[in-house]
Length: 131
Image 1 (cartoon, rainbow, N blue to C red):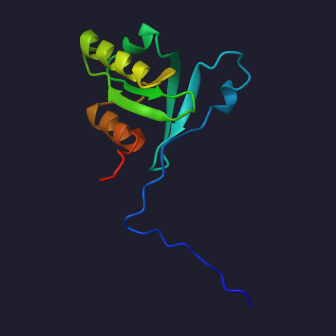
Image 2 (cartoon, rainbow, N blue to C red):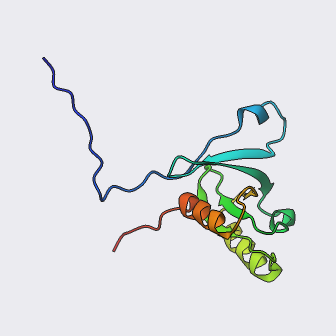
């Protein structure tokens, strides 16, 4: 009789990365305007899709902003803040463009600062732990 093997997660295992889970209801649209991300926790975050150079993506207040690579990975994330400080958001936009971002995804459904912070922690890419 063959033995069954189970993998028990190690305390030091890397948590799974956030992954994009496109909305099926929007799949038939010619233009991708909405998508969803599944965080490391398994929670789902619906977002509007903007080209990285589209300044409208930076016009939202109290939003979670995700810089997304052409390979569909989140390369940076931030809270837009309650006032949408243009200078800081413009610097962030230029930095993520230089880092290779192709799109900015905007999650507007986080109701307050605590839920935006929780979404950021769930979706942000993990820092490399080489050293």
